[in-house]
Length: 67
Image (tube, rainbow, N blue to C red; front, top):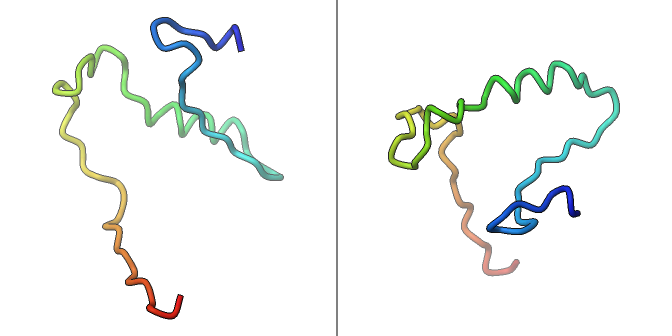
């Protein structure tokens, strides 16, 4: 974990993991890389571009009283 250490936060980080057979790693990597914003585009939260939300509206299903 020493190689993951970064001041001032230590080893706190986020990771995404893909597990599966037959994953096309070059295509997956290229698509993920294409989704990244360059560091100089948004140095502060207020500088982020106004991008459309790519996710559909999340709907909560009411919890059944018998659940």
